Image (cartoon, rainbow, N blue to C red):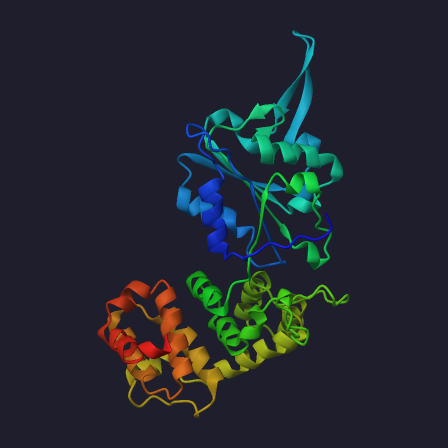
Length: 366
């Protein structure tokens, strides 16, 4: 099976919910479990689904097990050991699966379509029969898999008899707004988030068909492409930015993570940081704090994401909202509102009268 097309694409949240909905089945109701195989391009958060499930389902009832598909051999999964008393061979399951503690399992097979051919029957039994070696997983266990698109050109292909045993879904890249909410909650540098707001095309996908001239993103047709922008590589940039290294060193490291084009964009925001109005100055005098020139979006975007990082009271939110009400660009105001309402500050924002008034007055923009 050389090419797989699945419709529609699902968000990471929808993929997670699909795995929860069908992954365990219901033995009493006669409903078999379904193994979901999540496909997407590199670096967009497939592997993070396991951690999402851990946070939602908790570890009292479940073990959460990561299996690096291509890098496991037979002895890493289960071994056939002689039983000298019975003069027979028995399967011993690897400790990775924690089979002795009685907990249900949530097992993710990562890079599932890169597993060696010799190992494929073992994983197929896991997908279809919920069996490791000859030992069945506890009832209610979930098995799912992740891999790159077959069109990514990184060696991911699926044999028809295996494809017929799983539900293949394609996961979309996050939008800027989805990623920005995650990034602000993770404490990713506002410089990175603001730069992404300025260049949201970094969240486009080569599968969309009109992105051939996009210099930032992964594209399997570029044979010499090694570094590109993805949610994963943006996360890695955070450590470089926060180290405040010399210009050439920072640029070189960032280019190695996200490519030269976006690395230079990031460095322009590093340079901008010293020139924008400081958050404390805005809070001290929101009615008169220096406003960037009309049409100059970059400093405002940076100030927004710095504010998201530093607002910790209704008083500060009131004052920054007062400042934002002076911004002429409705687009910038909308970015502020949407990111605020998707961040950990959302509860504070919902209780804030100035934020509520802006939302009511500008509902046509949302």
